[in-house]
Length: 354
Image (cartoon, rainbow, N blue to C red; front, top):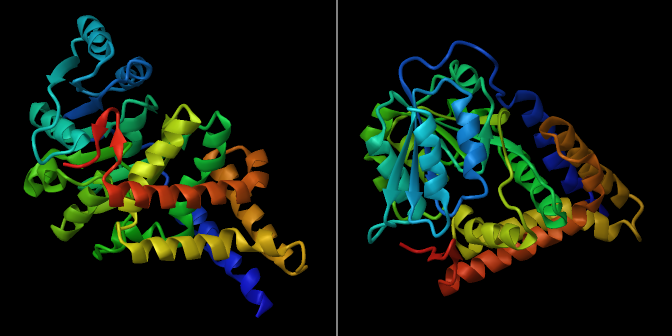
């Protein structure tokens, strides 16, 4: 019976090792064929938009369109300044989502209609692509591709929580199977960096198919898979970097907005996640003071974190705070469920409800 306090920790470790070895990491090849449009939805991104645009202009994209989604800061003015210097840059001015739509889906739909490319590269405003991103994406033969950029973490809450993004991706799903499977349940996605064939998105009806989904990236690949399109999910460490949140409050609010909807928005799914993370990633640490064998589980957790740190360029020192990060993650999951149940979720001054 005592084995239940440490043996489960070996399972996510084993899955992570397999994924680290097998998860596709794009290599240099031929550039994406045809015309490529880089598309950036932006709302109140004055602190990040310059870096995003500058990075994209170092690539050989054919056009770069930024949709300013009714920002209250000078995001639009910054993009207009870039447009005056580089003919590839265009600024679209949005007025907010129409009824029945959430903001990002509406912005991406507007960008899709404005684009002229054969390939559409959607990039969040806090993402910095590498100059050869189109050559790294060239060998990717899929209709809809999402990738996880290298995640930058600076503040203490960022450093506790952000590494759990990769831990979550690698612990519970055989990631290389996403590419070959036709099963809508075998999916993972990350909306920070999305590449899609323009004609494939047209077949889906564009982002209208996911207009009211809070976790629009997962909804998009799920619809694509059900429509018979080819979907892939990449390790984007060599494609781009991203500092998703710049404060502890933003980390907590951001994941509170997405976490419960992302696991299916059901009490059963929440119970499974709480039980899974507690038994595999927290219980060994709680049992170690009085059960020597529990240190095997602690060691498995630490080894898993060190493997992830080496592959995804996390701080190895942050691994020792693993149980604190897991507890914070579980509290955020409960907060996310509460936000959803009460309809109190909001982001950038807008309610998270269509």
